[in-house]
Amino acid sequence: MKKAFHGELPHEIFARTKQPYGDPNKEAFFKDGKPRDSASCYLDDEALNRVGVFDPLIVQKLLRKCAGSSRLGFRDNSAFMGILSTQILAACFVILSVPDVCRFELKTRIFYLCNRLKEP
Image 1 (cartoon, rainbow, N blue to C red):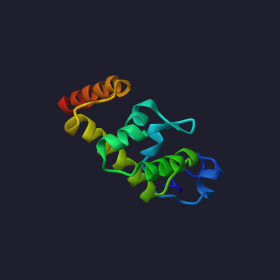
Image 2: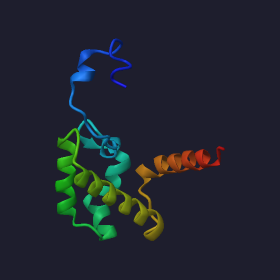
Image 3: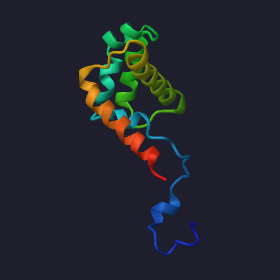
Image 4: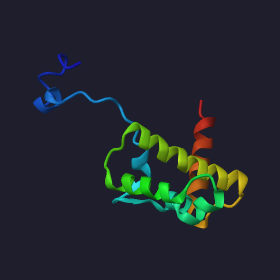
């Protein structure tokens, strides 16, 4: 591909080090170094204690790492997504109590996903 577009793309494209694809998982839930409301309502100490699966001190340490880094390694990114997913599932299907600040966004995303699944 580099040969095919050699004359059309800037030299920087060809000179940079090849990098593997990385999911932007963590990046979708942080803005300006802080968790978005849609994620923070599941990750605060009260929510973590309510579910009781994760140690709030360790989660807060991971959140500080997420907030301070533009890109995480696979392990930290997976840990963040696993914690957030577990918290959301517990709130929706175990505790049956989704925080108000998350309710609208959660319904909107579920509606969007359901409609996408109906498309051929």
